[in-house]
Length: 367
Ligand SMILES: *Cc1c(COP(=O)(O)O)cnc(C)c1O
Image (cartoon, rainbow, N blue to C red; front, side, top):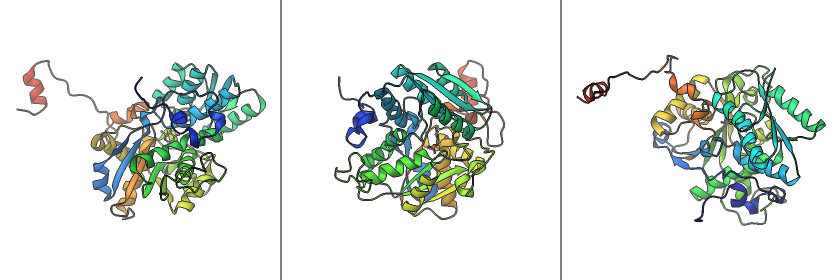
């Protein structure tokens, strides 16, 4: 067989822990496109690239961490895994657990799980429990379950998840030849910002001296400034305290008490970056610009990073000519309803025409 991408564990074996490599469970995750976005460059005065994580096997970045977490569990002979999820973790856990021949239990919060994600978890045969509570309640319950019963927790508090997810940073540096000036992304439970910062540091030779691959030569000359963006109704790190009832249309980041809070603040502070809030209106506007101008369809939560750089550009806070990578975290088909609404909330419906060329040409204003 000609060479094809082998998944992140095989591709980055020398920078990942040995225990995730004893029994590799992969669906070919990673190797996602880094796409230049002239429409965003023009709007910000920077050079903007999108790391399109919706191109992973279950259509979100969660697959990078899940291949590591499920491989690690498989190596220990685990038979069952559990996770709390706003949707994408459950879709990913269900797929990888199925590949590994394990049982997967999923705790999702009451209401507001995007249809695409729910259908994935069900299709892959997860035992799906909708919990009377929010995501944070689900995570507490999943942790306790994993402590008391023979099931392994595969949330991003599982260090193997962070190890897998750090490969997103490696791929960006490998594609650009060095770290970007700025890396922007949405922040929910804050595992991903933690993982990217770890990956950027390790590739610059600044990681923990005991990290796998610490003996290898540095790949990049520097690390980027990290910009994280939370939804305004679910912005605990910005507010400085947990949010009891987080609310946002961006369900992937509707989290009031991030598990990796301290690590997210460390990524911000060590990199000289920021963590800011963007409103649902800004998120939906960015969602629209991404699909209608950049050709990249994402779910609303994924648009928060783009909303963030646009908001900073409006305030004159984007350095001219800076090379910015925005990680867009999940695919638009996960939660497609937002594409079918106008900005003021009306339904978008197709124009009806009869099946003759003249009326079609008329409708297209070609005549
Ligand atoms: C999980 C997720 C996020 C948030 O990532 P965290 O690691 O929880 O901060 C953002 N976007 C999408 C699409 C996700 O699935």
